[in-house]
Length: 258
Image (cartoon, rainbow, N blue to C red; front, side, top):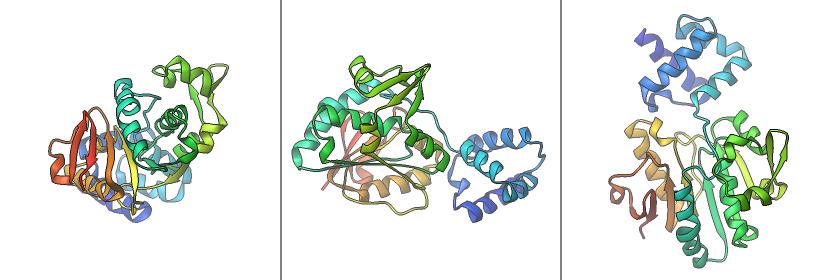
C-alpha cells in the first residue's frame, strides 16, 4: 500500500506539477484516503486512473488537497499590528505599494488588506496580487460572496462600508474586487515575482515538510525588497529567521535584512 501511494504521488506530479511529497505525508494521505474511499476506490492506483479521465474528480481532488479555511481579519490582533505598526512604516518609505497574498484561498486575506489600505488612502497607489494553486477557489474569491461566519472578526466600520448583505450572504464591494488581482500559482514549483513591500502567507506552511518550508522562506526572501515584510500565520513562527535573511519586527512579522 505504501508503494501504491508512492506511485500516486509520482503520477500526480507528472499530471499536475504538484509534488505531494513536499506535504506532510500523514496529514495529506489521511485526507486523500478519505476522499478516495468516499468515491468507491480501494487503491490509489484505481483512483489515479479515474482522475485521469474524469475532470470532476480531478477538480475535487485539487480542492481537497488544498486547505481552504479562511476568514476576514483572522486572528484580529495580528491585523491590528499590521494596520497600526507595519503598514504606516512601509507606506512612509515610498510612494507606491506592492503586496502579495500567497495561498490566498477564497480571498478574505487580500480583501482585508485592501480595506486597510483604502482606509489610509493608499489603495489607488497600491498593487495587491493574490494567488492560490486551486483555480476553482480563485473563481470563488473573484466572486467575493461570503457567509456570515467569514465576517465574524470584521469591525463594524468595515462591515458597513465594504459589504452588502443579501439574505444570509455578504457581497464585498466592487471597489475592493477591482483592487485585487487573482492568479494561479504553485508555491512549490512556480517562479516568484519580486520587489514586494509585503508578503502575507498564513496558515498554509504548517502543512509542508521542513524542506519545503525552507525553500519557500528562501523564495520569499528574494521576492521581497530590502526592508520588506513577511507576515505569517499564528502557528508558523520562524524560529531561526536570521538564517533566511530576516529579522523579527513583531510576533509573526519578519523584515528582510539589507
